[in-house]
Length: 177
Length: 193
Image (tube, rainbow over all chains, first blue to last red; front, top):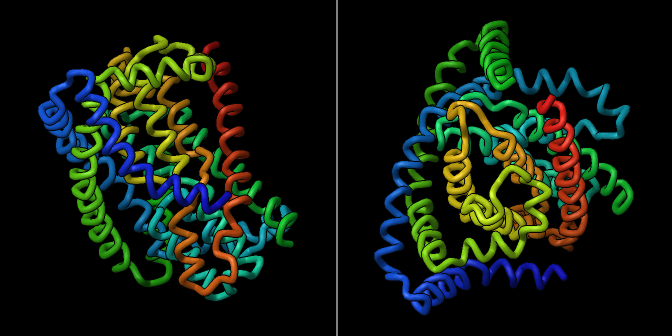
């Protein structure tokens, strides 16, 4: 099963690069001209994101580097132990929605410290693979069209993150605990 | 909410740094983050150009509309306010498919394209529409079949079974997608009134 998924993922992009232009050609699209016309937007969209990304990454960077994030993890520790979440993975849980690269670093650290086949190592792996960098996604997606008021989108994203954290802990306890 | 979270992170960081006598960390972290933000955006330029170019071919060939029509029963429930063969739906579906396959760098351009299409239907351009919130909920809570990066890290750390976490990851992302869909229903109902 895993092998099949790995193969699928390896072939997906070459397949799209083959399939879309050839089908377009068969349907009478001037493929190269259409490609260039679409690609033109790439730069505009990327540049438009910059102010949003600067604002969000600066706040996250200060929060993390100052040690405020570790304090928060420390304060939450007793509550989360009650819910059965091991304190070792808490910094990862807090960092995951904020910074993709930062969370990956923490997950890699946990894996090398506790071993990839330990309970903590496996739980950290599932957590890292399970949630998205919600703040980054919201910042980039809303920023690209100039939206400033997110309504309930942030709450929705965080609900998804918390659900996947709780599910990851429960599933790992059943399967590996 | 985003204003409060943003302010809280910034102020908490500065206060903690000051109280620990390492206020200079704030300066270096903020300047560093500002630089990182621009680098991230510039890295997107090439990827965006590649996928938006391909997407334009797919659109002109009618593929995007075909995909949107094929999955109409599903999207009609999730996005009741969108016209059934609106181009946003095609881009949303491509974005979610890329997310499901773990192809993060293909997912973002499709997602941004979807946002552009959704923005065309937006009566107040600075505020998110319900369709955008639903899309982002699905996107961040999306089910993942292949957490490729973490499998690589496990293999590099000499795991005896690097892919053992695939099953649990599929289950836990399935749970988060379900939670996102249910929460979205509730938020929609609450804001309609």
